[in-house]
Image 1 (cartoon, rainbow, N blue to C red):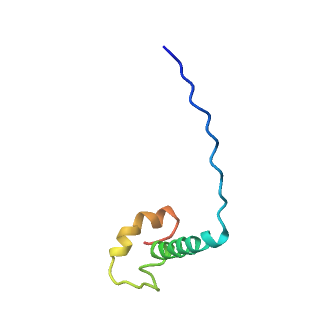
Image 2: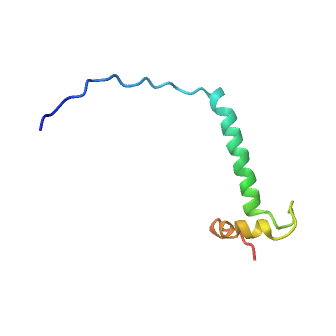
Image 3: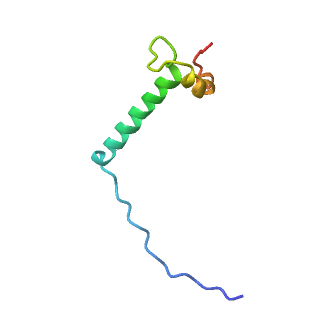
Length: 71
């Protein structure tokens, strides 16, 4: 078999991200995590925003996994 060599290519330049570019995404994901933590940890309790057991049933296993009591 013949062996061929690939031409050497220069490595792409690494462009640093500025804090201004990351801040909106960090705020969005931080808020999303707080909302998810609320629904897993506090929904169907004294501060319930939604009535019924639907949310509780959807996040039931996550509550146990994270150590939140639910029954």
